[in-house]
Length: 260
Image (cartoon, rainbow, N blue to C red):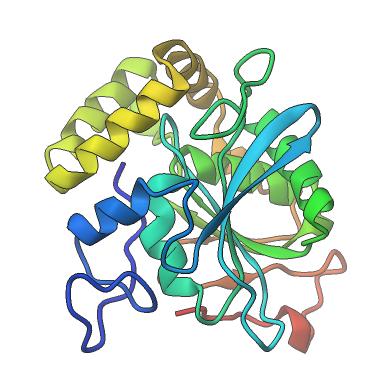
C-alpha cells in the first residue's frame, strides 16, 4: 500500500485524527480507515450515479476561504481507506474528496475492469457531477496513472497534479515484477494496515485486481505527459506544482502552490 506520507504532528498525540496527522499507522488511523460509510473525524460518505455506476466518495467539509479542492486517487487493489489520514490532514485548509474508483472500495463495478484511461474518463464525469473542476489531483501508485491520464485528457478539470510513487517502474514493468515489489513493500508497512488491505482486496476481488494490474504494466505513464499542459510534481507528497495554461505562460493563478 505504502500510502503517501502525511505531515508530522505538531504537538499532537498519536490518537489525533484531524488536522496534522502523526507519522505511522496506529489504532486511531485504523478506525478512521474502516469507518465508512459512517461519518467520523469530519469525513462523510456520499454516493452518486456516474455513467451508470454508483460511485462512493469520502469527503471533508468545505473550509472557509474557497481554497483549491484536492482529489485523492487511490492505488491498485485498494480504496479510499488508506488515504483517510492524509485527507484529514488536508481537510482544515482544503476541501478534500477521496472517491473509490469503479469496482473498488464501496463503488459499484463497471461492466469490465477499467484501465487508467477509462478510470480517468469516469473521474472527469464524476468531477462534472460535483461541479468541482478545476482541482488539485494527487494520485498514488496506479492512481498516479489515472491522475496523469485525467490531466492529459481533461486539462480543464485539473489545476495541479501530484504523482506519488507512480507505477510502473520500467525496471519491473511486468505482472511478476510488480508482484515482487508489492511483496517487498508489505514487509515495510505497519502491521495494522493489513486489515485495511484485506478488506480492500475482498471488495475488489482477485479477478479485478489481476486485470487492473495487467492494464497497469501495459501503460507507460511517462509517455502520458508530452502532450499535456500540466507538468506533474513527482514526489512523496511534499508539495504541489501547478499546471501551466495551454499557452505555456504562467500567471499568478497558475503559480506553484504548497498545500502542506
